[in-house]
Image (cartoon, rainbow, N blue to C red; front, side, top):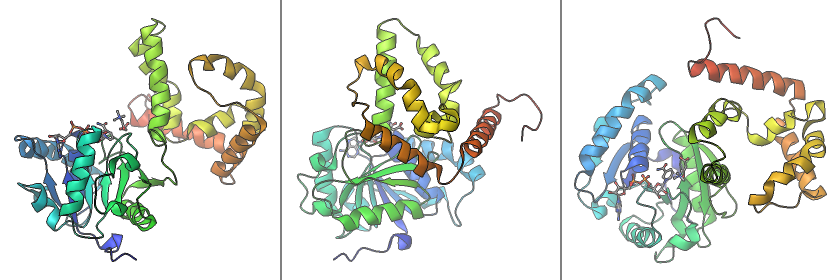
Length: 320
Ligand SMILES: NC(=O)C1=CN([C@@H]2O[C@H](COP(=O)(O)OP(=O)(O)OC[C@H]3O[C@@H](n4cnc5c(N)ncnc54)[C@H](O)[C@@H]3O)[C@@H](O)[C@H]2O)C=CC1
Ligand SMILES: C[N+](C)(C)CC(=O)CC(=O)[O-]
């Protein structure tokens, strides 16, 4: 049984670690109208944090601020205990070092009022490995953001073995109230979902550079001038379903399955058996949510045009 404050009644957020990501979280929560307390042990952290918030604020203002939102609602606390004493939610964004995270999360647990959820921004450690030293690990979980957290909506939420289900549900709801787009994961995966995908791409990019097969620019251009345009609004599974024409994902796998398998030599790949085929087809149908292939094609095409326009690559005229 939890006595946690309802997520939509949270007014005060504490951000621990105020570098690239912690500072980005601070800007996000300020823009959404929260009182934010930050703590970071670096002597120059307060100035750096103010610079980051000042730099982000014009874009956040253009996007639209919550009522009463102001950079003046940021307090930088002199000590971790002070930062956490009144916290209604804590977002930890300290360096990606396992021992440091373990120790810090135990300190945050000791300093934060009971039933207040503490989320880690870790980009890869499972919470099971980080919550080992905390006295009350049930309210510790991962809330993995994307850079910059004040512009990229996604947060991946996942608990560890000792995390309570109420805490996972509470955090997912809180992030939604705070304007984020949330994926709540039922189990821990290395790299969560998005980083696992990014890491696969990244690993191949490194292979190509190391082997002299492609330049960094060619790799980057291959994404920004190619699939990246589609991925801004339609994920890799649905876009590949469209590669199968009216036959969708089923035809795409039957047609390209064998040839797609040949470059998998560098990867540990699953067997493309009938169960996986069915799961992919069913997953695409679910993601399409009733939209026909023709409707998805029209949506994809207009999306590409919108992204081209938004990134200044569309010659004049209204493409809609
Ligand atoms: N940089 C990125 O693109 C992303 C990073 N993350 C995660 O966010 C976390 C922070 O990463 P960055 O902001 O990139 O690192 P960073 O190096 O920019 O910032 C880390 C901050 O933590 C402070 N710090 C050092 N020791 C500390 C301690 N014991 N307690 C509290 N703060 C401490 C440092 O002074 C620094 O300001 C990591 O867990 C990382 O995996 C997650 C998503 C994206
Ligand atoms: C580079 N990174 C692994 C820390 C990146 C992330 O975790 C998410 C992002 O912003 O792409």
